[in-house]
Length: 373
Ligand SMILES: Cc1cc2nc3c(=O)[nH]c(=O)nc-3n(C[C@H](O)[C@H](O)[C@H](O)COP(=O)(O)OP(=O)(O)OC[C@H]3O[C@@H](n4cnc5c(N)ncnc54)[C@H](O)[C@@H]3O)c2cc1C
Image 1 (spheres, rainbow, N blue to C red):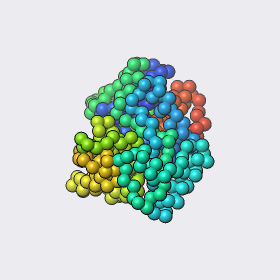
Image 2 (cartoon, rainbow, N blue to C red; image 1 turned 60 degrees about the vertical axis):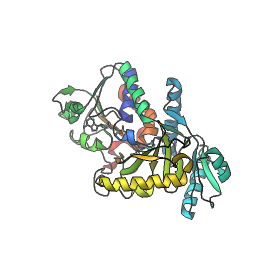
Image 3 (spheres, rainbow, N blue to C red; image 1 turned 120 degrees about the vertical axis):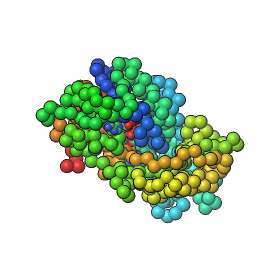
Image 4 (cartoon, rainbow, N blue to C red; image 1 turned 60 degrees about the horizontal axis):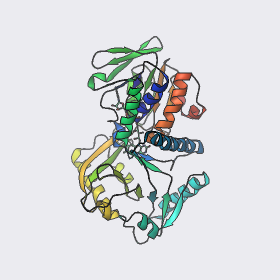
Protein backbone atom coordinates (compact mmCIF):
# COMPACT_ATOMS: atom_id res chain seq x y z
CA UNK A 1 0.00 0.00 0.00
CA UNK A 2 1.41 3.38 -1.02
CA UNK A 3 -0.08 6.52 0.54
CA UNK A 4 0.36 9.63 -1.64
CA UNK A 5 0.56 9.90 -5.43
CA UNK A 6 2.95 12.83 -5.70
CA UNK A 7 6.21 12.40 -7.59
CA UNK A 8 7.57 10.15 -4.82
CA UNK A 9 4.56 7.84 -4.52
CA UNK A 10 4.08 7.68 -8.30
CA UNK A 11 7.75 6.78 -8.88
CA UNK A 12 7.61 4.10 -6.18
CA UNK A 13 4.35 2.67 -7.57
CA UNK A 14 5.88 2.43 -11.05
CA UNK A 15 8.96 0.61 -9.70
CA UNK A 16 7.10 -1.71 -7.31
CA UNK A 17 4.58 -2.54 -10.02
CA UNK A 18 7.42 -4.01 -12.10
CA UNK A 19 8.27 -6.52 -9.38
CA UNK A 20 5.24 -7.27 -7.21
CA UNK A 21 1.54 -8.01 -7.35
CA UNK A 22 -1.32 -6.58 -5.24
CA UNK A 23 -0.04 -3.02 -4.94
CA UNK A 24 -2.45 -0.19 -4.27
CA UNK A 25 -1.76 3.57 -4.44
CA UNK A 26 -4.16 5.95 -2.69
CA UNK A 27 -4.35 9.74 -2.76
CA UNK A 28 -6.84 12.26 -1.46
CA UNK A 29 -6.61 14.19 -4.73
CA UNK A 30 -5.56 13.72 -8.36
CA UNK A 31 -2.04 12.28 -8.80
CA UNK A 32 0.65 14.96 -8.70
CA UNK A 33 -1.69 17.68 -7.44
CA UNK A 34 0.20 18.32 -4.18
CA UNK A 35 3.59 20.01 -3.83
CA UNK A 36 4.87 18.24 -6.95
CA UNK A 37 2.54 20.32 -9.12
CA UNK A 38 4.02 23.60 -7.83
CA UNK A 39 7.66 22.58 -7.97
CA UNK A 40 10.32 24.44 -9.91
CA UNK A 41 11.40 20.92 -10.89
CA UNK A 42 15.04 21.73 -11.52
CA UNK A 43 17.02 18.51 -11.83
CA UNK A 44 20.31 19.32 -10.18
CA UNK A 45 23.03 18.61 -7.63
CA UNK A 46 23.94 22.29 -7.33
CA UNK A 47 23.95 22.87 -3.57
CA UNK A 48 23.86 19.31 -2.39
CA UNK A 49 26.37 18.74 0.40
CA UNK A 50 28.20 16.75 1.72
CA UNK A 51 29.76 14.72 -1.08
CA UNK A 52 27.59 11.66 -0.37
CA UNK A 53 24.40 13.73 -0.85
CA UNK A 54 25.83 15.29 -4.00
CA UNK A 55 26.50 11.77 -5.39
CA UNK A 56 22.93 10.82 -4.46
CA UNK A 57 21.54 13.80 -6.38
CA UNK A 58 23.82 13.06 -9.36
CA UNK A 59 22.36 9.55 -9.43
CA UNK A 60 18.92 11.21 -9.42
CA UNK A 61 19.92 13.35 -12.42
CA UNK A 62 21.13 10.28 -14.33
CA UNK A 63 17.93 8.38 -13.49
CA UNK A 64 15.82 11.17 -15.03
CA UNK A 65 17.89 11.28 -18.22
CA UNK A 66 17.70 7.49 -18.55
CA UNK A 67 13.94 7.29 -17.88
CA UNK A 68 13.19 10.09 -20.35
CA UNK A 69 15.30 8.37 -23.00
CA UNK A 70 13.63 4.99 -22.39
CA UNK A 71 10.12 6.39 -22.50
CA UNK A 72 10.61 9.21 -25.01
CA UNK A 73 9.50 11.69 -22.36
CA UNK A 74 8.96 15.21 -23.67
CA UNK A 75 8.66 16.30 -19.99
CA UNK A 76 12.47 16.22 -19.70
CA UNK A 77 14.28 19.37 -20.86
CA UNK A 78 18.08 19.34 -20.69
CA UNK A 79 18.91 22.99 -20.05
CA UNK A 80 22.08 24.99 -19.40
CA UNK A 81 21.31 26.88 -16.19
CA UNK A 82 22.72 30.43 -15.99
CA UNK A 83 23.46 32.09 -12.65
CA UNK A 84 25.19 35.27 -11.56
CA UNK A 85 25.77 37.33 -8.43
CA UNK A 86 25.69 41.05 -7.83
CA UNK A 87 27.37 41.48 -4.45
CA UNK A 88 30.54 40.23 -2.77
CA UNK A 89 28.88 37.60 -0.59
CA UNK A 90 26.84 36.25 -3.51
CA UNK A 91 29.97 36.21 -5.68
CA UNK A 92 31.92 34.23 -3.07
CA UNK A 93 29.09 31.69 -2.73
CA UNK A 94 28.81 31.26 -6.48
CA UNK A 95 32.59 30.80 -6.92
CA UNK A 96 32.50 28.18 -4.17
CA UNK A 97 29.66 26.38 -5.98
CA UNK A 98 31.39 26.41 -9.38
CA UNK A 99 34.72 25.27 -7.89
CA UNK A 100 33.12 22.54 -5.79
CA UNK A 101 30.98 21.17 -8.62
CA UNK A 102 33.95 21.17 -11.01
CA UNK A 103 36.10 19.38 -8.41
CA UNK A 104 33.35 16.81 -7.80
CA UNK A 105 33.06 16.07 -11.51
CA UNK A 106 29.88 17.99 -12.36
CA UNK A 107 30.29 20.36 -15.31
CA UNK A 108 30.30 24.01 -14.18
CA UNK A 109 32.02 26.89 -15.94
CA UNK A 110 32.22 30.68 -16.23
CA UNK A 111 31.18 32.37 -19.45
CA UNK A 112 31.34 36.06 -20.35
CA UNK A 113 28.29 38.26 -19.98
CA UNK A 114 28.14 38.67 -23.76
CA UNK A 115 28.25 34.88 -24.27
CA UNK A 116 25.40 34.53 -21.74
CA UNK A 117 23.37 37.16 -23.57
CA UNK A 118 24.09 35.30 -26.82
CA UNK A 119 22.80 32.03 -25.33
CA UNK A 120 19.73 33.62 -23.79
CA UNK A 121 18.78 36.69 -25.84
CA UNK A 122 15.85 37.54 -23.57
CA UNK A 123 18.28 38.42 -20.73
CA UNK A 124 19.20 41.94 -19.61
CA UNK A 125 22.27 41.58 -17.41
CA UNK A 126 23.26 44.51 -15.20
CA UNK A 127 26.24 46.37 -16.76
CA UNK A 128 28.57 45.53 -13.85
CA UNK A 129 28.11 41.75 -14.25
CA UNK A 130 31.17 40.56 -16.19
CA UNK A 131 30.78 36.80 -16.01
CA UNK A 132 28.02 34.29 -15.55
CA UNK A 133 28.19 30.75 -14.17
CA UNK A 134 26.87 28.09 -16.50
CA UNK A 135 25.79 24.58 -15.47
CA UNK A 136 25.50 22.61 -18.71
CA UNK A 137 24.51 19.27 -17.23
CA UNK A 138 21.29 20.28 -15.51
CA UNK A 139 17.69 19.83 -16.64
CA UNK A 140 14.11 20.85 -15.97
CA UNK A 141 11.11 18.54 -15.94
CA UNK A 142 7.42 19.23 -16.44
CA UNK A 143 6.01 17.40 -13.45
CA UNK A 144 2.42 16.88 -14.61
CA UNK A 145 3.25 14.74 -17.68
CA UNK A 146 6.03 13.00 -15.74
CA UNK A 147 3.67 11.97 -12.90
CA UNK A 148 1.06 10.93 -15.49
CA UNK A 149 3.63 8.71 -17.24
CA UNK A 150 4.61 7.08 -13.94
CA UNK A 151 0.97 6.45 -13.02
CA UNK A 152 0.29 4.99 -16.49
CA UNK A 153 3.29 2.71 -16.09
CA UNK A 154 2.15 1.62 -12.60
CA UNK A 155 -1.40 0.91 -13.79
CA UNK A 156 -0.12 -0.97 -16.83
CA UNK A 157 1.71 -3.35 -14.49
CA UNK A 158 -1.38 -3.92 -12.36
CA UNK A 159 -1.11 -1.32 -9.59
CA UNK A 160 -4.56 -0.28 -8.35
CA UNK A 161 -4.83 3.52 -8.12
CA UNK A 162 -7.57 5.05 -5.94
CA UNK A 163 -7.85 8.83 -5.84
CA UNK A 164 -10.30 11.43 -4.59
CA UNK A 165 -11.70 12.59 -1.24
CA UNK A 166 -12.98 9.09 -0.41
CA UNK A 167 -9.39 7.78 -0.76
CA UNK A 168 -7.95 10.15 1.86
CA UNK A 169 -6.23 8.09 4.53
CA UNK A 170 -7.68 8.94 7.92
CA UNK A 171 -5.69 6.31 9.80
CA UNK A 172 -2.89 3.83 9.32
CA UNK A 173 -4.27 0.85 11.22
CA UNK A 174 -2.21 -1.52 13.33
CA UNK A 175 -2.57 -4.90 15.01
CA UNK A 176 -0.28 -4.74 18.02
CA UNK A 177 2.98 -3.21 16.77
CA UNK A 178 2.37 -4.31 13.15
CA UNK A 179 0.75 -2.29 10.38
CA UNK A 180 -2.53 -3.83 9.21
CA UNK A 181 -3.83 -1.44 6.55
CA UNK A 182 -5.35 1.98 5.92
CA UNK A 183 -8.73 3.40 6.84
CA UNK A 184 -10.10 5.73 4.16
CA UNK A 185 -12.37 8.76 4.50
CA UNK A 186 -14.93 6.97 2.31
CA UNK A 187 -15.33 4.32 5.04
CA UNK A 188 -13.33 1.46 3.50
CA UNK A 189 -10.55 -0.35 5.31
CA UNK A 190 -7.88 -1.66 2.93
CA UNK A 191 -5.74 -4.36 4.53
CA UNK A 192 -1.99 -4.25 3.85
CA UNK A 193 1.09 -5.97 5.25
CA UNK A 194 3.34 -3.08 4.16
CA UNK A 195 2.45 0.62 3.98
CA UNK A 196 4.80 3.12 2.33
CA UNK A 197 3.90 6.59 3.50
CA UNK A 198 4.79 9.30 0.98
CA UNK A 199 2.21 11.95 1.78
CA UNK A 200 4.64 14.85 1.25
CA UNK A 201 4.48 17.52 3.95
CA UNK A 202 1.45 15.74 5.49
CA UNK A 203 3.58 12.66 6.23
CA UNK A 204 4.19 13.38 9.96
CA UNK A 205 0.43 13.61 10.57
CA UNK A 206 -0.37 10.44 8.61
CA UNK A 207 2.46 8.43 10.22
CA UNK A 208 1.41 9.62 13.68
CA UNK A 209 -1.93 7.81 13.30
CA UNK A 210 0.06 4.56 13.62
CA UNK A 211 2.20 5.93 16.45
CA UNK A 212 5.22 6.52 14.17
CA UNK A 213 7.40 9.63 14.22
CA UNK A 214 8.48 11.53 11.10
CA UNK A 215 10.26 14.83 11.69
CA UNK A 216 9.77 17.66 9.17
CA UNK A 217 9.83 21.43 9.56
CA UNK A 218 6.13 22.02 10.42
CA UNK A 219 4.63 23.24 7.14
CA UNK A 220 1.66 25.16 8.48
CA UNK A 221 3.24 26.71 11.60
CA UNK A 222 3.27 30.54 11.57
CA UNK A 223 6.62 31.78 10.22
CA UNK A 224 7.67 28.30 9.02
CA UNK A 225 10.41 28.25 6.37
CA UNK A 226 8.73 25.36 4.50
CA UNK A 227 6.20 27.48 2.53
CA UNK A 228 7.39 29.19 -0.66
CA UNK A 229 5.84 31.75 -2.97
CA UNK A 230 5.61 31.11 -6.69
CA UNK A 231 3.94 32.77 -9.63
CA UNK A 232 2.97 31.56 -13.08
CA UNK A 233 2.81 34.09 -15.89
CA UNK A 234 1.59 33.79 -19.47
CA UNK A 235 4.06 35.14 -22.01
CA UNK A 236 2.89 37.81 -24.42
CA UNK A 237 2.55 37.14 -28.16
CA UNK A 238 5.89 38.84 -28.92
CA UNK A 239 7.86 37.34 -26.02
CA UNK A 240 10.66 34.91 -26.90
CA UNK A 241 10.67 31.38 -25.51
CA UNK A 242 12.90 30.98 -22.46
CA UNK A 243 15.14 27.94 -22.90
CA UNK A 244 16.60 27.37 -19.47
CA UNK A 245 16.54 28.07 -15.75
CA UNK A 246 17.75 31.55 -14.83
CA UNK A 247 19.08 31.98 -11.28
CA UNK A 248 19.43 35.73 -10.84
CA UNK A 249 19.77 37.54 -7.52
CA UNK A 250 16.12 38.29 -6.76
CA UNK A 251 14.56 35.98 -9.34
CA UNK A 252 14.47 32.33 -10.37
CA UNK A 253 12.65 31.79 -13.68
CA UNK A 254 12.01 28.75 -15.85
CA UNK A 255 9.79 27.92 -18.81
CA UNK A 256 6.58 25.91 -18.37
CA UNK A 257 4.46 24.25 -21.06
CA UNK A 258 1.99 26.52 -22.87
CA UNK A 259 4.27 29.60 -23.16
CA UNK A 260 4.16 30.13 -19.41
CA UNK A 261 6.96 31.02 -17.01
CA UNK A 262 7.47 29.91 -13.41
CA UNK A 263 8.86 32.64 -11.11
CA UNK A 264 10.12 32.61 -7.53
CA UNK A 265 12.57 34.59 -5.39
CA UNK A 266 14.32 33.51 -2.20
CA UNK A 267 13.92 36.90 -0.48
CA UNK A 268 10.14 36.90 -1.12
CA UNK A 269 9.84 33.35 0.25
CA UNK A 270 10.89 34.78 3.60
CA UNK A 271 7.79 37.01 3.57
CA UNK A 272 5.17 34.26 3.32
CA UNK A 273 3.83 31.36 5.31
CA UNK A 274 0.78 29.11 5.08
CA UNK A 275 -1.38 31.91 6.54
CA UNK A 276 -0.40 34.76 4.20
CA UNK A 277 -3.63 36.40 2.96
CA UNK A 278 -4.47 36.18 -0.73
CA UNK A 279 -4.17 39.94 -1.33
CA UNK A 280 -0.57 39.86 -0.02
CA UNK A 281 0.23 36.84 -2.21
CA UNK A 282 -1.14 38.86 -5.14
CA UNK A 283 1.11 41.85 -4.33
CA UNK A 284 4.21 39.67 -4.02
CA UNK A 285 3.36 37.79 -7.22
CA UNK A 286 3.14 41.11 -9.09
CA UNK A 287 6.56 41.96 -7.64
CA UNK A 288 7.88 38.71 -9.15
CA UNK A 289 6.44 39.67 -12.54
CA UNK A 290 8.03 43.16 -12.31
CA UNK A 291 11.39 41.56 -11.58
CA UNK A 292 10.97 39.16 -14.52
CA UNK A 293 10.15 42.05 -16.87
CA UNK A 294 13.31 43.80 -15.70
CA UNK A 295 15.70 40.81 -15.85
CA UNK A 296 14.15 38.95 -18.80
CA UNK A 297 12.54 41.71 -20.88
CA UNK A 298 12.68 39.58 -24.02
CA UNK A 299 10.75 36.71 -22.42
CA UNK A 300 8.50 38.48 -19.92
CA UNK A 301 8.08 41.99 -21.37
CA UNK A 302 4.50 41.23 -22.43
CA UNK A 303 3.72 38.62 -19.77
CA UNK A 304 0.65 38.69 -17.56
CA UNK A 305 0.22 37.12 -14.15
CA UNK A 306 -2.03 34.06 -14.22
CA UNK A 307 -1.47 32.63 -10.77
CA UNK A 308 0.33 33.32 -7.51
CA UNK A 309 0.33 30.88 -4.64
CA UNK A 310 2.10 29.68 -1.53
CA UNK A 311 3.12 26.04 -1.60
CA UNK A 312 4.51 23.97 1.25
CA UNK A 313 7.71 21.99 0.80
CA UNK A 314 8.23 18.72 2.67
CA UNK A 315 11.33 19.97 4.48
CA UNK A 316 13.36 17.68 6.76
CA UNK A 317 15.27 19.74 9.37
CA UNK A 318 18.66 18.76 7.86
CA UNK A 319 17.42 19.09 4.23
CA UNK A 320 18.15 15.41 3.56
CA UNK A 321 15.67 12.65 2.66
CA UNK A 322 13.77 10.69 5.31
CA UNK A 323 13.54 7.15 3.95
CA UNK A 324 13.21 3.73 5.51
CA UNK A 325 11.42 1.32 7.83
CA UNK A 326 10.14 2.53 11.18
CA UNK A 327 11.54 0.72 14.21
CA UNK A 328 8.40 1.59 16.17
CA UNK A 329 5.83 0.04 13.74
CA UNK A 330 6.58 -3.17 11.80
CA UNK A 331 5.71 -2.92 8.12
CA UNK A 332 5.63 0.89 7.96
CA UNK A 333 8.07 2.61 5.59
CA UNK A 334 8.41 6.37 5.03
CA UNK A 335 9.70 8.22 1.95
CA UNK A 336 9.65 12.00 2.15
CA UNK A 337 12.18 14.54 0.95
CA UNK A 338 12.91 18.00 -0.27
CA UNK A 339 14.43 18.06 -3.80
CA UNK A 340 12.02 15.22 -4.40
CA UNK A 341 11.71 15.80 -8.13
CA UNK A 342 15.47 15.35 -8.63
CA UNK A 343 15.68 12.37 -6.28
CA UNK A 344 12.39 10.58 -7.07
CA UNK A 345 13.39 8.04 -9.71
CA UNK A 346 16.68 7.06 -8.07
CA UNK A 347 15.00 6.82 -4.66
CA UNK A 348 12.23 4.64 -6.08
CA UNK A 349 14.79 2.12 -7.35
CA UNK A 350 16.49 1.91 -3.95
CA UNK A 351 13.16 1.67 -2.12
CA UNK A 352 12.02 -1.17 -4.39
CA UNK A 353 15.20 -3.09 -3.46
CA UNK A 354 14.52 -2.61 0.26
CA UNK A 355 10.79 -3.31 0.21
CA UNK A 356 10.61 -6.11 -2.37
CA UNK A 357 13.89 -7.91 -1.75
CA UNK A 358 14.71 -7.01 1.85
CA UNK A 359 18.15 -5.72 0.79
CA UNK A 360 19.25 -2.68 2.78
CA UNK A 361 20.46 0.02 0.41
CA UNK A 362 23.78 1.39 1.68
CA UNK A 363 23.07 4.69 -0.12
CA UNK A 364 20.10 5.25 2.22
CA UNK A 365 21.97 4.52 5.47
CA UNK A 366 22.34 8.21 6.40
CA UNK A 367 18.70 9.08 5.74
CA UNK A 368 16.71 6.84 8.11
CA UNK A 369 13.60 8.21 9.89
CA UNK A 370 15.05 7.34 13.32
CA UNK A 371 18.01 9.74 13.00
CA UNK A 372 16.12 12.62 14.66
CA UNK A 373 15.28 10.58 17.78
C1 LIG B 1 8.17 26.06 -4.85
C2 LIG B 1 8.93 24.76 -4.83
C3 LIG B 1 10.04 24.59 -5.64
C4 LIG B 1 10.72 23.37 -5.64
N1 LIG B 1 11.76 23.22 -6.49
C5 LIG B 1 12.35 22.01 -6.61
C6 LIG B 1 13.34 21.81 -7.60
O1 LIG B 1 13.68 22.73 -8.34
N2 LIG B 1 13.89 20.56 -7.73
C7 LIG B 1 13.50 19.52 -6.92
O2 LIG B 1 14.02 18.43 -7.08
N3 LIG B 1 12.56 19.69 -5.96
C8 LIG B 1 11.98 20.91 -5.79
N4 LIG B 1 11.02 21.11 -4.85
C9 LIG B 1 10.70 20.02 -3.93
C10 LIG B 1 9.81 18.98 -4.59
O3 LIG B 1 8.81 19.61 -5.33
C11 LIG B 1 9.22 18.08 -3.52
O4 LIG B 1 10.27 17.48 -2.79
C12 LIG B 1 8.35 16.98 -4.13
O5 LIG B 1 7.39 17.52 -5.00
C13 LIG B 1 7.68 16.21 -3.02
O6 LIG B 1 6.90 15.21 -3.63
P1 LIG B 1 5.99 14.27 -2.74
O7 LIG B 1 5.46 13.22 -3.64
O8 LIG B 1 6.73 13.84 -1.52
O9 LIG B 1 4.84 15.25 -2.18
P2 LIG B 1 3.49 15.74 -2.87
O10 LIG B 1 3.67 16.09 -4.28
O11 LIG B 1 2.92 16.78 -1.97
O12 LIG B 1 2.59 14.43 -2.84
C14 LIG B 1 2.03 13.95 -1.63
C15 LIG B 1 0.66 13.42 -1.95
O13 LIG B 1 0.13 12.85 -0.77
C16 LIG B 1 -1.25 13.08 -0.77
N5 LIG B 1 -1.74 12.97 0.60
C17 LIG B 1 -1.42 13.73 1.67
N6 LIG B 1 -2.09 13.32 2.75
C18 LIG B 1 -2.85 12.28 2.36
C19 LIG B 1 -3.77 11.43 3.04
N7 LIG B 1 -4.05 11.58 4.34
N8 LIG B 1 -4.39 10.47 2.33
C20 LIG B 1 -4.13 10.30 1.00
N9 LIG B 1 -3.27 11.08 0.32
C21 LIG B 1 -2.64 12.05 1.00
C22 LIG B 1 -1.40 14.48 -1.33
O14 LIG B 1 -2.71 14.67 -1.87
C23 LIG B 1 -0.32 14.51 -2.39
O15 LIG B 1 -0.79 14.20 -3.69
C24 LIG B 1 10.31 22.31 -4.80
C25 LIG B 1 9.20 22.49 -3.98
C26 LIG B 1 8.51 23.70 -4.00
C27 LIG B 1 7.30 23.87 -3.13
